[in-house]
Length: 199
Image (cartoon, rainbow, N blue to C red; front, side, top):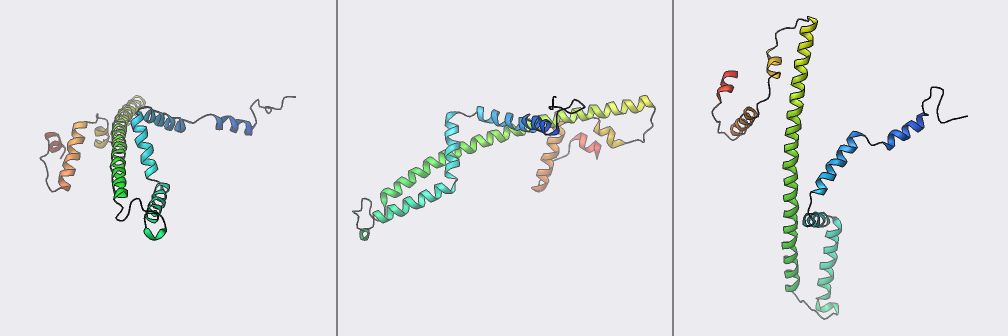
């Protein structure tokens, strides 16, 4: 007798849960696609810069330098019993640390530049997705209105709904955002003709 399914022909609940858990959901797949896209656009130099930036931002890096500086000072102190190779004020250590700071700053700037480029790319993608979603919602509103007309359903006059059915003007939104920023800075730009008509 086959025990892999119940009397309805469906697999047992635990087997179904196992199959669903093995199948990646759309959220996981989307995250994996984004990570794959971001990692594939990195050059070897950017990967090196990101790795160094992550390492220098760890507590291990701080502890390593504490041990390094402590041993350097101990080995170059006369009372420790060792022959100093870089006596006080530790000129050679200062030069090494300065060179390290220069290179670390360059690697961190490279990593931040790439992060800024990724942020700009994500912002553009977000804007495109939002514009597509806005057009889809506008189309849905038009379809719902057509259904109302076809069924003969009367609705009250809604001016806001009429504005929502219009296509979004990016230039209008940009000027509105600039006006808000200018108002916050205390310098208000003149309104456009469309904004004066809406007012």
